Length: 68
View 1 (cartoon, rainbow, N blue to C red):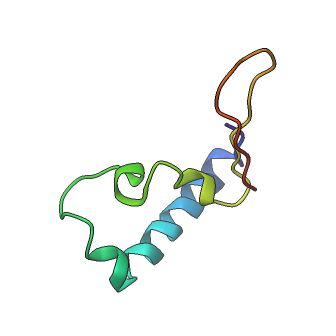
View 2: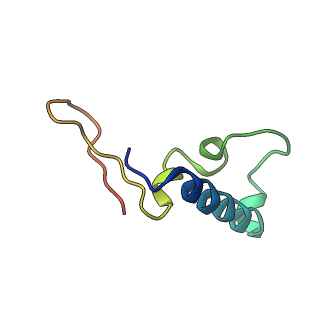
């Protein structure tokens, strides 16, 4: 996974989560309490953030997905 600098990624993901939580259609599907962002918003949540992409390592087989 390639992503922006850690502090920027943390700030961007926090803002994105708050925006999603303020959206009525998203909140109805989330159980109150502790939950990870991927459990709340899906396994590709991180890939929805600016500058984040999943890259395949040379010689490896499997996941080929890139979203910027």
